[in-house]
Image (cartoon, rainbow, N blue to C red; front, side, top):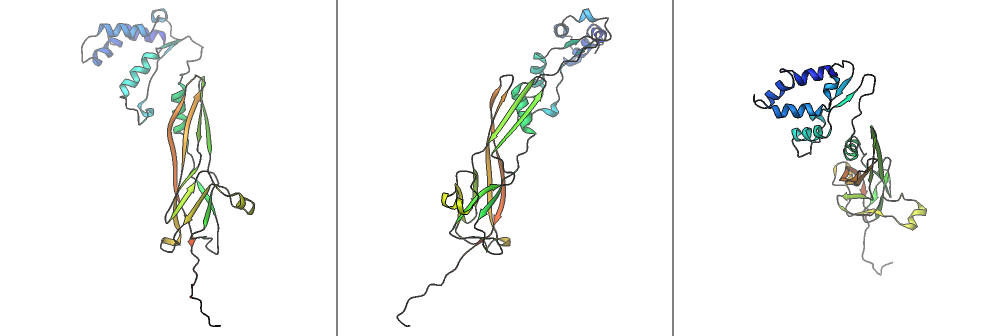
Length: 263
């Protein structure tokens, strides 16, 4: 509101006093009205000004975090108490809302989607590209599987940087045992001699599964930290992506016979 509109609202019986009257169950609250006037420091000086404006902090429940245990009214009261109205003369830019670094980091992270992991494997035998029961099956992250994600967000004078870091794939195969301490190494003849940090040993073929492929649950957990230009820093809850992929598993059968002395 302009300086003139604000002064009229604060001073008239059907303005701020009328609002407080209804907020307090139809009881007069002279003390509350005086506190309201005190928030508009020096408003009398702008009572005739119709070109400058008072800017007032507002809050929307639509943007309140779902896991915030506080009541929305309490959030508003805390915010408004620390953000009094600001007078801006005609022709000057309105104030930019200052978002603290921790709040900005959380809001930025809520807008991020980390893709689920995709994997490659070896060996890949025959037309089905199957691995083999009892063999070391190499597993490695492929495609858009990120080991680290960095996000930067700026609002007004504050910039927050969020970093999500993962150290390994977590594999849970059906009918097999996984050992994974990293993101795996793509198999090659050169790498074969070096070994891998991520493998599965399957103990049964995929014949009893639908489409003759064995399900493998793949998860990646990210530790999240943030820093901001206002000095804020901290951590957030671990974020985990999860998906299920499939690997065909075959078995090599052999025939054992008792040796004889016959030619």
